[in-house]
Image 1 (tube, rainbow, N blue to C red):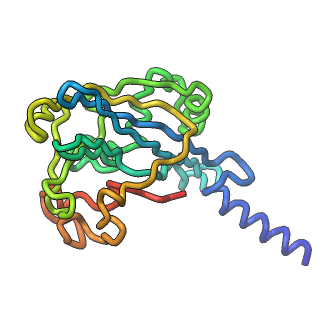
Image 2: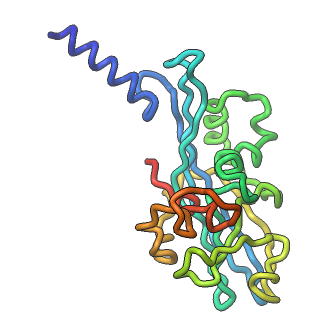
Image 3: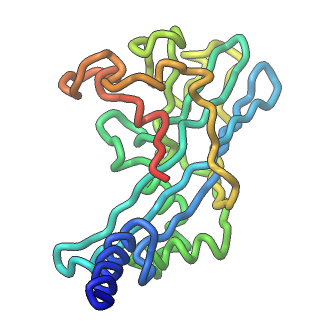
Length: 231
């Protein structure tokens, strides 16, 4: 009985290692704060959010069948521009069609590429970033997708924003200044549902379709582009 119990504990530990690192450092988490600074009618307006990326290495468990993966937890950064509207920086790549390929994990690696060039595997990369707590101003092509809603109560009214031309969306006097990424240990941001209450129940794409089947922004995006809870 004791031997059987030990075997089961071993199996459970191996399975848990994918999620928690039990029995070996197979996964590590890192958090970063993303801050957007915008000039609004001559005044600085900022919005920021803390996002978590969990990197996993399953090669030790599955051998050649294993690989690397990541899970993202957090929510879109919200920048309240007052009477001009609201800007959202999504958990999505900078362009339509990018999705997670250009999402938070990708952005983290590219933003700190100069520090990470000597490290190939993701777990040493995470350790290095957590030790140094680096800070960078993002290039425009590293910024996640920016959107707004013509009507915050209507998810189908979503529109993508050009960071280089905010006046086209929000009117004169609104100018993008910079986006800053900084590794942190702060708690994750929460509360986007207060701005977009329909996120709580949405199970479809923003246009109401069940699947991504059309070439429109509202059909490409869904609730996971605005918030994820993979803790």
